[in-house]
Length: 502
Image (tube, rainbow, N blue to C red; front, top):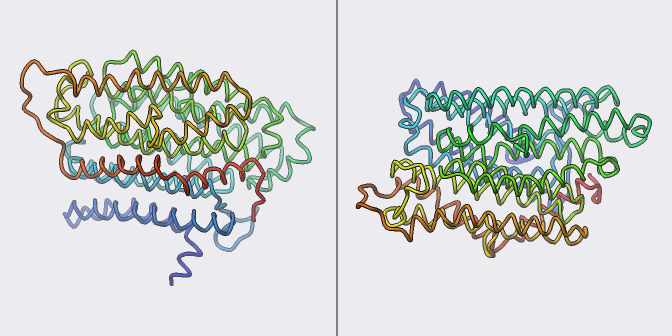
């Protein structure tokens, strides 16, 4: 039994999450809401355990392929399990478990009814299943399917609160997500026309010998992918939907979208570029140069927009735009060090931004204040919540012993290795700007006295546990990054074709 599970684990992870999502509405019949929450958290814990197991297997035995139903590619569906898969599955587990734990405290109150809360958890698990599918898929058809499932679930959870602001943000997000999906579909169409295949391995094999016969058509296809996934991952200046969507959604939705959902689209883009097209072709085209420039612009522009915001959640939303720029900067460097730093930043930013949004949501809810200028003295009434927010802020700035330092240090080394001193300057300036828009929140909360004594207290116990889990995780990754950093660097070597896939 154990052998059968381990052999079929890649597909079982996706099936388990999808099945759990479909079962949750049925569990409402037993009228045990806590059972629904426990069932959801258990499924997410199994995802983390499964992801860690696959990551260990890849580190020790190399990448491997899984043929669904025993049908070989290109006739059947092929899953590719490599270091990138393992790293992203671990990231999914690290982030989704504390978010769901946090949500269990007051989800019914946040969305308005128990029935809406159950549908929110169903959508949450569907989104997690889609991201897991993006991590393991090896063909373009399933990339599009999982991207669409993720997009629909993401749009739906933004509207969970069902107020005017959420509906407006949802509509904007839906329109732009649809446009992004259209561009992704056009890109897939170009690859299929040029190669006659949807399997990534077969596409790469075909393009390796024929792409110079139609470089313009291939370049057009890659442009569609950059625009489509650029919209979905909020790459500046295609980010216009993100600030409203992430700042108006309920706290668990904001944390999930900003920390994890947009990373899934970046993982999909990396798979298209390096597993379907191939590093040799991507580096021959001006794609990495474009992504490098867009990443540097995003770092500065997103930080400046964040600096101008007084509303806490909106400031964090624009911060995400800036941090996405770090990921694309690393991709644009086109080196093992740079790409490894980019992948490490996906993990670091995911756990850090999840913590920041959860802490910010607690502060806004229990104080009734959403503006930073009105949060004087919050740290005295909510020391643990503001304390973990401080841990997240220090990580986002890139202070040593926090996870953000590990990824930013790798990006800095990658920039120096590539001889790109402009990128070095942007990385340093981006960190200084991050300090400028995050540390004042801590200053106001801890070092300014309120005009009158507040009547609120700490967040709920289970919410404190969820936030403390993320805070400890940030410190552990920052202090002992060894295995995860090795996984990220191995993933970078695999994507760049410096490691032979088994």
